[in-house]
Amino acid sequence: MADLHIVDTTLLTWVPHRTCRGVYTQSLVDHEISQDLEVKLVRITPGAEISPHVHEHSAETFYVLCGEGAFYVGDQLVPCQSGSCAHAKPGVVHGVKNTGQTDLQLLAVFTPPLTQAQAAKQVEPYQIVVTVRAVKGTCKFGHQVGDQIVFDGETVNGRICMSALYSFLPKIFAMRYGADFPWLDAAHKDVATHACPDAHNPVVFEIRRVKTS
Image (cartoon, rainbow, N blue to C red; front, side, top):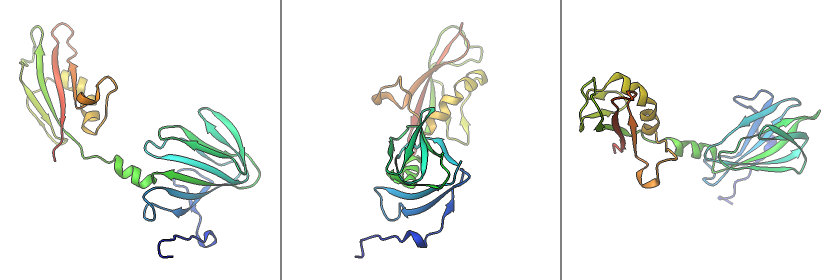
């Protein structure tokens, strides 16, 4: 019995949803109980909704216990009622709206738990090393092949043309926090290239992210 988790929902308090008005939840199984899934009892008052949203790292399964409503499927609403079930894979936009006159209640099952998925998403930032790989024409700033600039999130170490910096700064920020670009294969996902804005005298930079630990 020690390993059997039992919940009496009549003793639980309904907690207001942190962003959706008229929506309340009870936590039945959380990440401290299970590393495999998270289960919530959800109550949506008439006219209220869980607006369309995405869980990037968790799948969500809705099972309607009572009431009438509609599932958001893309930009459409699909009617649902007691016994209806919907499953949204990670990255799929989903939501549910109460279209009836009484509370809509449903079970929401998240796999893996939302908290666990969010924790997994938190990555240690990379150090970014930018190296000049080619200079075609005459660089007014004076960049030469082999020049290096290091970004650690707090400082920029090395000389860098401001025009070039502003042009590739979004890419540096994205790569620093683990973004992958679809045009880079898995073997080279940590290295990207970028040309400065001067079309007549382009300087080509290699942007490489490096783990600091």
